[in-house]
Length: 179
Length: 253
Image 1: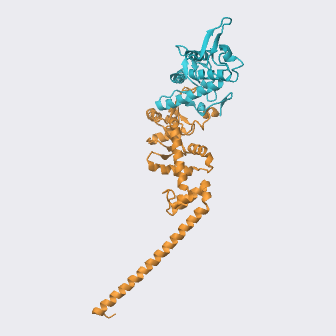
Image 2: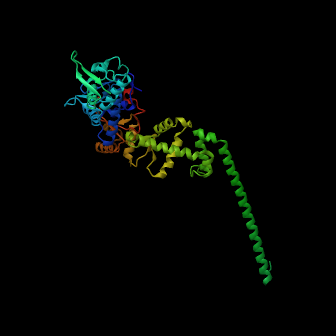
Image 3: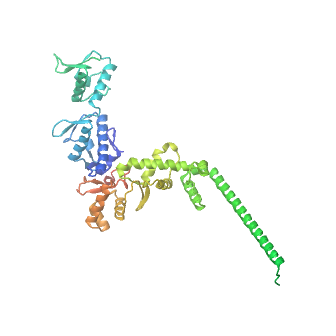
């Protein structure tokens, strides 16, 4: 089986027609389903949050069988993820796509769990610390996309679980957990 | 012989007829008895054979197929009923029912990939994978027998031969001769192009497109426009599945 780094590629990745959008509805549905799973899986394991449609992306071409996805196909697969709430277009032109292998709600739960596990109740952290600090090392939060993190924090703020404020001394925003 | 008229003569004749009838009955009874005895012996022998080779029958696919052949010759169908002594003795009915259920399962599972037509070989290997725990090996012959039993259910399960390969059909699609010929052609590379079909089968382009369109609509074919030569390829997952063809084309070139 073919691999991309440490990622095990599924069988269909080597079957050329899966790189052409299928015209028949049922066949296309199956095709879209397989690609959706592959994209989410890959992004989860590789911690990828943003896919640029005009940039090189290892999943979108397979040199072994000399096939690559057309722009139309990429957009179709990502749109399918968007319609399920597992991705979001970042611009009107659909050039960049934010991949949510965890939904914002799930990320929010992750943050809460992290705060509880580390005894961070009533503690203040900066956003940057959550993303790359020592505490989050080894957790899913480590290295996460800032946009996604902010969205999850905003959601928690709405629920009164955290307070976000602008720090006086630093440029970064601070987060106070109040669990 | 001199004619003997009178009541005495008639009585003698009647008595003789009775005697003959009695004798005849005796002979028939004797024959039936012998026949019955032979049948019992045969049945015991067959039972004994089955009991003795129970494990071989269950474990060894080649032996099983020979056993089936032997049973067929003497007009016994061990699969005819699950209640018969065969089933109790060998559990052989259960074996095929189980196989049948698993075959239906696999066919349903892969239908969206292959349009309801699956290579017998692939079906078998998937069956084996699924039955790893059971440890009894399954041959193609077993698959065919199990599918044969599925026919009764009327789900359209059938085995069709295309070229050298056997395909198992799980949807009631009508495949005509043209479709079959294209599938046969596709076996070489896993795909065909319109030009290839035109050339190899000497068909008009209309006939080719028409046929390919149908196969596409039935979900049996997938298009591939990604090749350098810009020629559309029609791939058939039922003859070269996504699990077996690892970039067949790339390997060749």
